[in-house]
Length: 364
Image 1 (cartoon, helix red, strand yellow):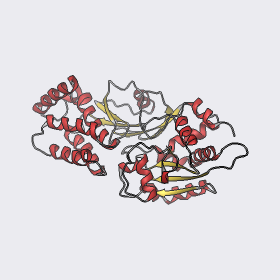
Image 2 (image 1 turned 60 degrees about the vertical axis):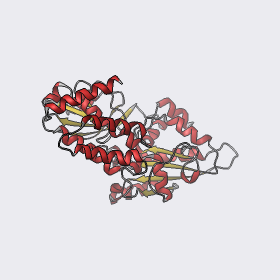
Image 3 (image 1 turned 90 degrees about the vertical axis):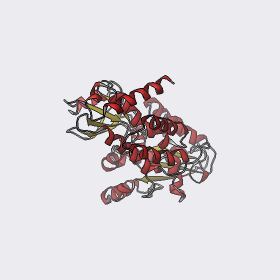
Image 4 (image 1 turned 120 degrees about the horizontal axis):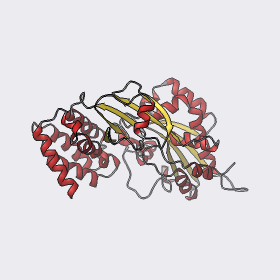
């Protein structure tokens, strides 16, 4: 078959799970790793609120997705002319909500056909952290679903200590397009929130957030801000900051500045991370609990709260804890401290304290 790696690299494919790691490079790592068995895992856990693109692909383009998995299995199994192929097995690590969709699962099984691919239902208790790639490995192995210490990394020591390729559903979809010479530099976007035409769209990956919202007739005529990259860990931007691509998982959520209470939003983000922490590391387990505790006080100690967010970012074991401050910090800096934020429901005393604390943070 044609050299799939050349096609992947020529297309410039990167991971669509949020990390953006070069796809061709990851495949090569697994190819070069020594092992009599290798594994290919499609991460379909999609646990980030506001992201629905993988579900859209599984429902509407399962053949494309599975073709990408097939190409990965064939590439990793091929050792060259005259040599015995390596045994490669695949898993679809499926979001438990999606596994309840009988029509989706039936179609997926039909698409798998005779391929050595098994559908593995993500444990219901795994939560958001269960989508981290080493947590996925633990889940399939029947262990406690929590991130592993790295190194070693999955490409060399993954599932059952064998070389393992873990890619997002959309990544495999893009690989299929690249192999067929049909990839056009596009990606999927999920649009949610205070807009009329919510849903999943596909546009060029270099389009700005502003252009995407206008193209879909979702650009608001009122004061607003957006969260990009997921409703939990995504960065919050004001309407003047939208001339940039939608990075990460490609989700865009629109918020009316008048409709939403700042403290309700901040508590929502804090609640998400408190409930989704796997409890493995102390900074995240205790930090997310303390964060919500501080927000429950009548008079919020913003200095202590922002210091706690800094600690979470710098000392947490995995991406969940380190990304916990992203939404809150960016919301305070990009929205609350702007003219739009001045019209939101937040006491002047709190606003001044936040401004003073952010000034100290930025100067350090």
